[in-house]
Image (cartoon, rainbow, N blue to C red; front, side, top):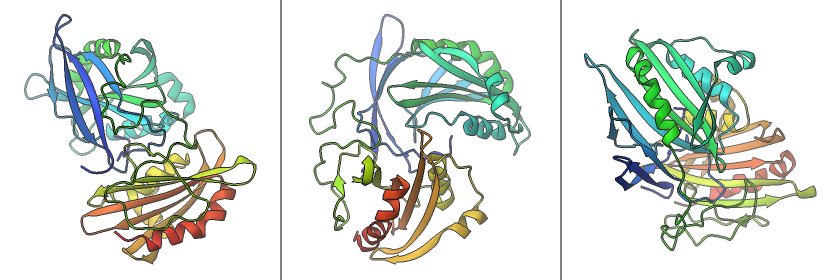
Length: 358
């Protein structure tokens, strides 16, 4: 979902409370590794916690990548549906792109902004308003009738997506239970900080470009020389390292470093993820290949891409990304922020990537 990418240094631990019955709630801890397709987490927030009541026909499933919780629903004649609860920090404001991607997955045509407003059904999630999108069509691969329910809401700067996908008839019949599940969701606050281990970053934190207390050196961090003027700050659970760079008139940029096993979702998925952060439309592989340049680094070849768009606040922004494959994992470097700062720091960023030793 959402071409998202999400162990390793970027493991996210979710503490999920489930209710077997209204009178006998139990707690469960789940660990989900977030691939690079997952938007960068830069606010240093701790693991999100939520509680919910599971509908009678739903069976819990392993959460897997990206999911804080997952369920399976079995219907008649082998019909089935899957439910996933997915938190994506900093990913609000992309409804049109997301809905059109969901519509494509069930063989429906894309819509524009005017049509999007008509598709959104109001729904209550965790006691606050959310949006519910109900898309029914046919699976482009199998031709089977398929339906997709996705609820979207925000809680403390994190975009949450609750998704049910499966047989058209079964999902339609489960829609009331899906809505009841949404209403049952809550985010306990009391004691959340006390349950975190001593080395875990504090719950809550500053915004995208705010300076924070420098973190302790991370195990497995490459050997590198930090350019002058770069201030290392806490980057949260998904980053190996994070740096803040400032320019004239309080202009700023961030340098984020993360890693992932294998190819980390590949070139196309990661470049389109970065394009989404600049509010740019995704590109096909052939078009992306024309924009990527390769440079030699101490760790082998790196793929570099330079893009300009707008940030979530609607301000012009520039992003230079570098992908460095290694034998069993891939490293991701991203310089993003004010055009003026990125232009000033692009040579330092390039040298930083080229001289890193793994």
